[in-house]
Length: 197
Image (cartoon, rainbow, N blue to C red; front, side, top):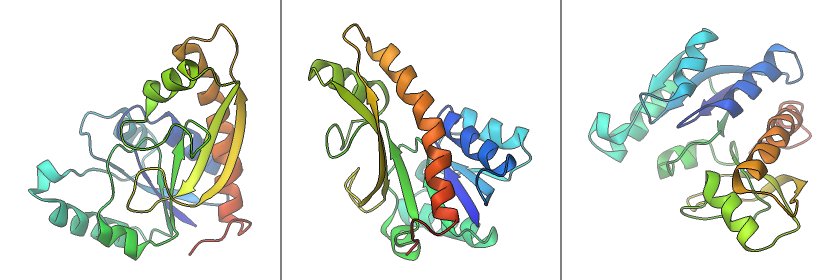
């Protein structure tokens, strides 16, 4: 199975996926990495692993439509079977959603449907979880549709929230589990336990 990973910033989830494929924990290959941020660490990580990578943004291409066409061309070029959004901070164009229907997955650092939607990413999520005095949070992997964080949930894992947690401490605990969980779930997608479209 050929995976395209989309990432906007640090790319630690991308690295976990790459490592999982290299260690044969995932029966797949990351064939291409796409980022909307030309300075993202994700692009550097891809370069370090000799994986083709592309900075692709609407600003660069002039419109969302042209961007979508260019992204589809790249995905086609690298025979992509599934797309994984690993900290990708943009909604995908409808043409990409239609072409890869049920084959696009996102990871979210909370137990959806709680703490999802526009603006709910990174530290904002962990801050909101602590403010709501939740006893547990976690990681959700879901299919992607045209609305933030509202696609079908394919897997969730729980992470305890401790009494003295700061958002930063909680973020670290969730991220540790996130990297393990990514490998488990993508492995299940690659071996057919979780069906593609």
